[in-house]
Image (cartoon, rainbow, N blue to C red; front, side, top):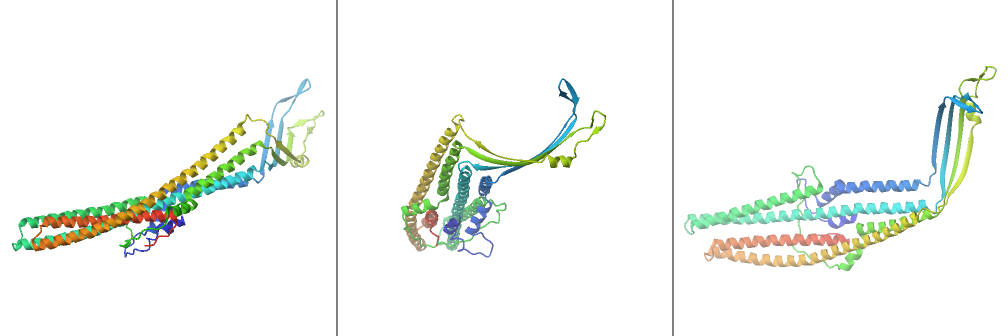
Amino acid sequence: MKKVLVIILGLSGLGLSAQKKWSLRECVDYAVEHNLQVIQNQYSKQIQDANLKIAQNNYLPSVSANLGNNVSFGQASLGTGSIRNDRFSNNINIGADVLIFNYGRLEKTIRKTQFDVEASQYDIETIKNDISLQIAQQYLTTLLNKEIVKIAQSATENAKKQFDRAKITTEVGTTAQTIVAEAEAAWAREKQNLKTAEINVGRSLFALAQLLQLQDYKDFDVENVEIGEQLSPQLISVDEVLNTAYENQPQVKAAESRIKSAIAQTEVTRTAFWPTVTASIGIGSFYNNILPRTDQFGNSIIDPTFFSQYKDNFGQQGGVSVNIPIFNKGITKLQVEQSKINESIAKNSLDQQKQAVKQNVQKAQFDVDANYEVYLAAVEAEKSTKLAMDFADKSYVAGRGTIYDLNIARNNYANAQGSVEQAKYNYLFSLKLLNFYAEIPLSL
């Protein structure tokens, strides 16, 4: 995860405000800590951690104890007759079993589980990366909308100045009343555009707050980051980016870990062909008491006391058992074949992940090149429309142009300014995405 923060968070320290505003770093840090998908996968990781501990603890012996009490009443057979047999008995035993040999099943299970833990950790990193990129894109969208507000504010101010000028010239009789009406209508349109731009800022802030899953989003705002006017093209090649991405992208590393896990599972399954040797030891004792009875002379017979019987009856046992598999309907062989299929599935999954990364890198590279060309074209168009607007303004002041021509020129210039900002931020995000795959720190 730290590589994503290095790559896309270079924007975070460039904007300052007297009022508390969220930096990009703060947005990303908050999201990866509170996002429900991340939390869900962290629970999955905890389950895998527990599975690893279970596998490791299987090396320990199994120790158990049992305590039994039994009371019986009634007749018991004796030869051709019967006797009264009212009896109370008690026993206690403690035993331990330890696995001696199973062809490395425990070790292989531990290794397999370790790969599962690795994969689950990479899954968390993948989700964090995805969320970070989403937030970076939405953050840049918000900055773009703020720039469009500035353009709309400038256009509104110019329209207001034009209205004030038209109002004066109309009052002195040098221009017709329709000029004032058109100037006022143009001013109204620019105010509408400004309000729409301001609403778009609020909408993008709301979308960003939803990505962050904030409860209170009404006062949420982001830092104002100054983006340089001159953007430079990127020079890194696609092959270099791909090599770096294959080595570092968590979704690829997760797929590699799952291949190792599938191979280890096959080894675990094969151990079922081999015998299992288990040793056991135990200790125990018992107490037995025939309820009140008498001898042939009518005297009461008293059994030895509880503790004396437990002392006299104390015993120990130990043994070794061998479980040799002979025939289990071919199930083990089929399970090994299933494991081999799972290996192929895992390898195919890795190929899919690499293919997805390759396509994403190629698309990012294409977008970087295309968006840079669009940006350059937009800058040229802005210069041309600025020049056209200046000529239209001078022509209008000189009386050789109409206010309609001037308004059209102003609208064209405002649209060209918006196109430059749109192209700039499109290029910036596509470059950040390519940098993300190439492990290149962001600098502006």
